[in-house]
Image 1 (cartoon, rainbow, N blue to C red):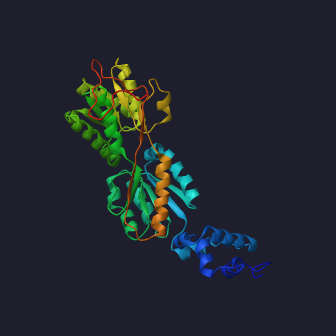
Image 2 (cartoon, rainbow, N blue to C red):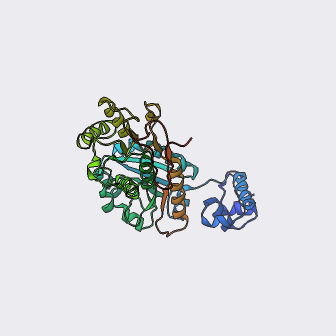
Image 3 (cartoon, helix red, strand yellow):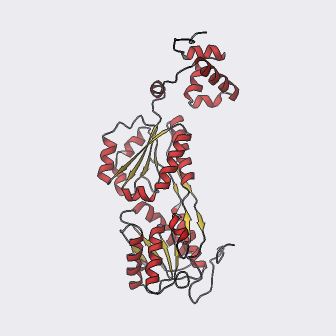
Length: 362
């Protein structure tokens, strides 16, 4: 049989061995969109024939044929963002492996370093580019040009520039539901500690949900109740809460953009003699391990890193197999985890808005 022994097997040899056409073998072994029309039995026969003949797969040839490689880049801009999204990066790595992609993670120190990385590399033939970049600088970056040229560019944060697809947690919905929960517990002076300067994209979505909930309940949207911090994590929560209560001592509920800030808020409140949740209710975002063991245990939203990663890689594959495709936006609903850091407003009774249950579900 041709291809046995020392002679290298070819696609024609595999086609003859499997009793199918050359094009069928090519579709199956290259796993392109035409392969979807081939029966499972025929695919199995082709793969078995390739194994018997010792057919050697040529990744460079396949990449040239398809027009793209199996390399996927995950670009993360700033180490703080890399730290806070470590679970997402690991989930992306697992999802890439499942789909036969090879993942390269690059962390850029700042906006300028990210743009330099994009400009000095040949990315047009990449399988796709996934991005964690929470800065207005992304709007003017090389990513829009790459997306316009057909490279799948997937933003893993909200409010992406035009022409770029988005797969991310639905942060607006989360903060809408979290604020509704506090309102349902009787809280009327609800603050938010956030970072609209260095984390503008994610923070503005969370602020939008917070403000929608206040508007639904007929509560005033008071800018004094919004405390912007640039200190990352626990320290930001401690210092932000001190400034907040000095300005608005009537606050009884706080929404925080991440769990570390929320834990800092609880700690600072306790130092001022305000116990959580008797005097102050706090909700975080991200379900960090620390929040599960803190006292009180933190009410928060679980980040669905695995769902975001899976859908992002499926979108990369879909955009590559069926080009050109319009950009898509996929928002993943997050689950709220009720723990011990939220309770009825001091001196008040739960008074849920229409359709919102009071208290914690049992």
